[in-house]
Image (spheres, helix red, strand yellow):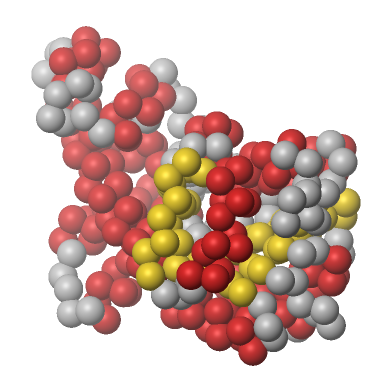
Length: 289
């Protein structure tokens, strides 16, 4: 697959950086986004435009998607203008979107019927991980699909693990998001406590940031909060989507998740208050920051 043509669907905060890594590695890139303006920077750097996911799939050996919501994933791959409606299906589909496990299984089944390999490969690491190609990639699919995807995945990620059959990558991403939900609540409460107690939060971080309380969120997002930087590395509205998928899956498994439920309620209130397009670190506003 060295330097084969890659089709890319979506050009958001993380997707654009990921697509750029593939171009820098020498892969010709064809791109489709719902709004062409989002793709302009990649087009200026040499990517070609496709009017639909189906058109893109006709020319690409591998098609990747990194879009917003499960319905976008479904339209991109299973819809009438989707990749699997192409007369000539690509050899491999990789969906980097955080989506539902059931949808990942449906895509894999439809892909297999068309002679195409498919893998669900949601990622973690935010805008920083996307820019630095250090993402953690959680994969669900067959061994054959994983082996076919590995060279491309290594261009955008650092930790790349096959978790199991189709859908397993999405289930693992739910585990990831549940861990982050608890971390974000704890960080927001702790920083708010420090501030209310009259401590200097930056000095506090020097003590707690290297001990047992250390976390990715504390290292990467707490400094943004202290600088009043609430620009999105990951949108609140997208994290809400993830939490709702996780809670739906948990209910189907007979699990009650009070921490995730509290995080969903807190983020939903923030979205309604106008923070939907802010970064997840804006959770501190729920505590009067």
